[in-house]
Image 1 (cartoon, rainbow, N blue to C red):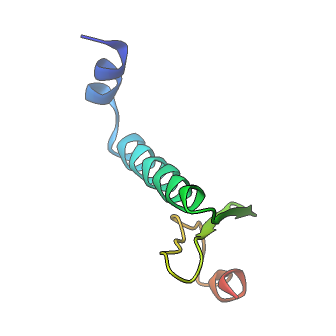
Image 2 (cartoon, rainbow, N blue to C red):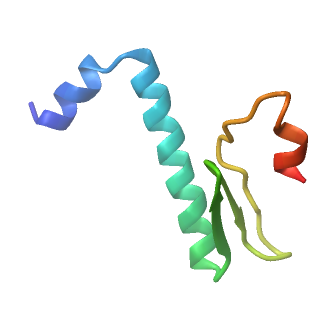
Length: 73
């Protein structure tokens, strides 16, 4: 069994959720890049803009009810 397999089998629920979020963030970034889109990061907030013909994504923002409105604006 590889080290990666052992790590996955012993990961906590939080570690698996974090790995899943990172995996999706990487996928969203690659999807934007392949169509000459843009990948943005600011204050722990990640989003992509892939142009008017493709999906743009907000990748698992770390927001609270207090800062969500101003962050998304």
